[in-house]
Image (tube, rainbow, N blue to C red; front, side, top):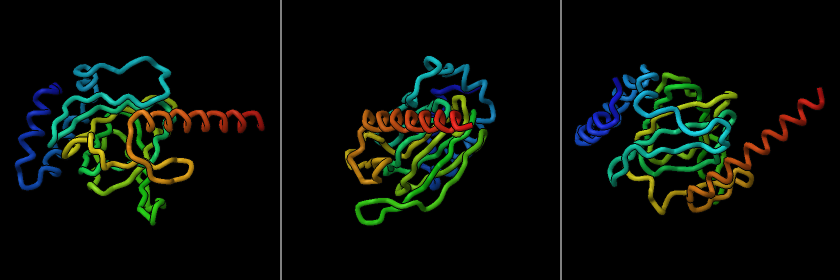
Length: 194
């Protein structure tokens, strides 16, 4: 049975080990094998049809952040960084990751990876990525970060211009809504052409 208090304690204990990322990755791999246990412990999230991702902080401290991310169907998130390592565990659905590298004051594509539940991915502290849910229904993940996300040095990139901005969660959520509206109107145009 998944127990969030025990999971948080185990992650905190892992931080003093020589390779905390590997240890937390293994713990998360074991946890996401049982999505029903995670759902029982955390519930299923808010109302269906919400067009923004739901970020539920399960633990926050200067050295460790754990959150659950619920992505609605067809969510697109703008490129952003974390400035700390991350271990992402998909326990339901998919998460497409598009990776970028800095090029002067803009970013350019550098790769991608599709994460399919139950799967774990490790992100280095210097990674810039944007995520999307390719499915028509929600996807669920647990994220563990090796530090705080409340770092004023974090960045967000405008998804339309790819220019760098200071990271602010309300701005990120607004970009997500704009991207989903744009994708929805393009999808409606494609359907009307058929």
